[in-house]
Image (cartoon, rainbow, N blue to C red; front, side, top):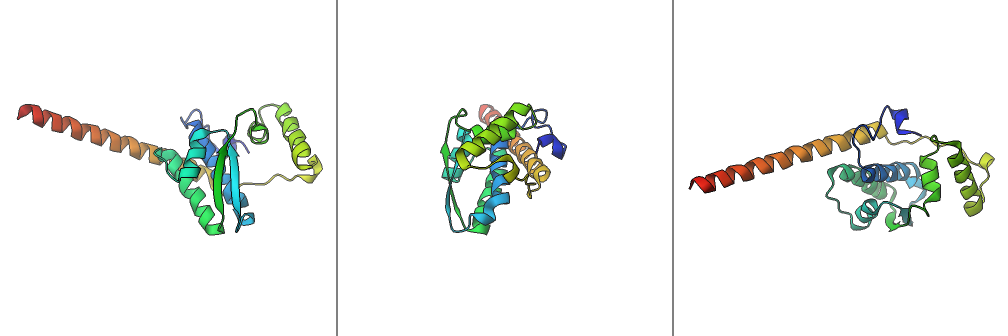
Length: 170
């Protein structure tokens, strides 16, 4: 679905594309994780920050960290391993056409053509699946994490300024 289906406008709310990409991975794994049990999965993604986050298990971005927690919780819950491989945006046809589904009808055609050519699925063999993860709550957590990080950064800067002031006074 669209972000607007959840009452959200990611661009207006200032979400970074890396946060949204990581959130999309968390949504997909929450939805399909139960089918991945005891498997090693390689997820292809055209966002380098998300690929690095998954492969390293680390992330400095507080917003992406929310999605990372959800991803790793899902991996533990369903007992599967996840790795990621970076691919070019041009190669990411299926995911990008699905994410632009509501923008223009041509993206639906691109999606169905790719699904038929790559996987042998016809339109009538596919069913829309509703995400089970609370997406609005996930994006709210991302916003809160970014706000907390900004507050912590401001506090660090104030402490550094106070130290410098004391140093100059001494």
